[in-house]
Structures are given as C-alpha cells and as structure tokens.
Image (cartoon, rainbow, N blue to C red; front, side, top):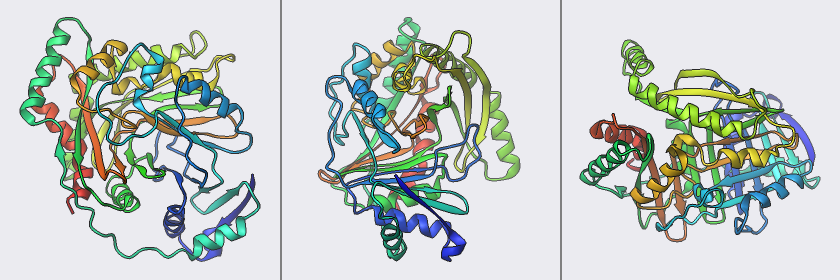
Length: 430
C-alpha cells in the first residue's frame, strides 16, 4: 500500500470537516466500512478511527464454512487491512442450530473486503493508504467534496414487532424456562421496524453519532444495505498475543443533575441483579476465551467497571488471556462467537430458546463489525444500539434487548428496552 500523512493545520481545515467530507466522498463506493472511537477514553481503547472503501462488486460469502473462508482471506491480506462483518446466524455453522425467522434486511452471513483506499484519522493528522499511487488525486477529491446543507428529516413510522402485553407474556415464559432448569439467563431482543422508508443512511449515522457517541461506533455500506451503529461494547480484540473481551451487562440512565448522576451510578454499581447477570456472562466469556488461550492465562482484569456514556451508565467487565501459539486469530473469533452478552447461559440452550421466542432474524444485530490489521491484530465490536436498512425494499430495523433471569421484573425489562432505544427513536422522530 502507498501511504502519505497530512496535518489538518497545514491544510487549514478542521479534523471534523475532513472526516465529514471523506465520509460523503466515500458514499460513491459500493462498499464502505467506517470505524469511529469518538476519542472516548476506554480500557484498551476503542476502535482505530478508519474509513475504508472499495468499488469492487460485492461477493457474497458464507456458504458452507464461513470461518475457513475468512481464515484464508486473513492469510492472504498482505500489507492491506481486512474489513469484516459477522452476522449473528453464523452460530448455525458453529453449533447444531438453525434459524427459520424472516430476514427483511438480508445482510450476508459473513462479508469481508480489502479496501482500495483507506484513511486513518488521528487527533492532529490523517493518513491516506491506496493500493495504487493515487494519493494526491484522492486528497484533492476529498477536500473538494461539498458538505451537504443542514440535515434533512429522517422521520419513520417505527413500531415494535411485539406488543407490550405480548412482551410481558414472553418474559413470563422465559422465567418459567429458567425455573425449570433450561438455563440461567437469556438475552431476549425486541425489534422495532418501519416499512416503505426512504432515508439518507449517512445523515442518519451522523445524527446517531452526534446524540450517542460511542467507542465502537461505525457505518457500513454493502451495495444497498446499511448499518448505522452506536455500539458501546467490544466483543474481542487481539493485541499482539493478548486477547481482550469486554462484555456489558448492566444499564441505567444518566441523571439530569450531577447529584442525580452520582446516585444512579451508585445504584447500578450495587444492584445485585445486574451484578449477578454480569457475573454469569463473565464466567461464560472466561470459558469461551479458554478455548483459544494458554492454560492459566485467562483472568478477569476488571470486574463490574462502571462506564459513563452520553445516554447511559454501563457495567463492563474486562477478561483477558494469552492466545495459544497454534491458535489462528480467526479460530479465536469463532471460539467466542456469538458473544455471551447477547445470548445467555448456558450458551447453546439460550440460543435455541432465543429462536423460539424472537420473531425475526437478528442479521448483523448482535453480530459484529471489525477489522484485521496488517500486523495481525484485530478488533471487533458487538453490534448493538444500531440501525439496519435495506434501501431496495425500504425496510428499517433496530433491536434492543436485555438479560432475562428469574429475578427479572417484566416492567423494568420493558422500560430498559425503551431506554436503549431512546437515542435511535429520537433521531427517527425529528
């Protein structure tokens, strides 16, 4: 790859304007992957801030053995990065599971591409990487790209797939399964959707990222399918020989005043139900990482950390381990997928019951978007707090959910779903 660095002050343009121009310039390409950390402090940092594009025809992957295909792609990536997206239903290639629900968005099971061009944004400069030596032309095109006027309306008539009474009945059924020993915990998700929607996905992403900036945010375009993500959660990161997973379990809203904020933070920190949920998933993640890590190396580095974001506080636990020398990075992803925070425990039985209780396929929701860097490292998020949109059938979807245990209060769980949906509903109702 050819590369060149440019400083914002030398170009007499702000970092925000370069990024905005670059994203609008990128919209002409068939494939876009944008990874945004919003410069939010985070243990082991958020995403690397990269915009990657390709104009190659989208090749639908993920037929018989998606992870083997991905492994080959990683082995052949050379000095380029590899942008990668994993749908939730890849679970069916890992375990003896199936999915029968309708899929209105139709993202492929797995997709990856090597960018023709990518930009790496830093606080005081940015780098352009190109397969061909077209860097000056690329810079000229980006800087000349006009920013659109004020954001247009993105109103959509959004409705829940499941009514509140039906939601309450479902939670009662899940609690009964737990009482009968089927599982300890299940992540049940509720879909909000709208039909015949015409919107500009990039503008929706900008709105979402403005109202709810997160360390694992992102924007995906695959031909006519889009993901607009404001994710606060890391699935798995490889940094040298270290694997890092940071599951979230535990959510509470932010306060209107500093005093109220501190009270709510303390309420989450001492909530026995949230702590119990977090501990169950922590144990599941430790088990998942132990499949890929050296014996004795898996440990909990931070337990029940409370992290503040613009809309909510989250309870986050950090689990680390040392990758076995003979374990391929893709195998480490496969061994932990899908993430325990979005399934439940025991994992396989929870996924079977998720299929029984939910009404639509999750698609990229509770799957992952991420990247493999040329040095062998990778980073993948958990796709939550995210919109999916199919521009052909004009179907818009987002899902929210929570961990259901026997102690769950159905009304509180429903209100938590609405809290998690708040930022997205806000931008779709203006």
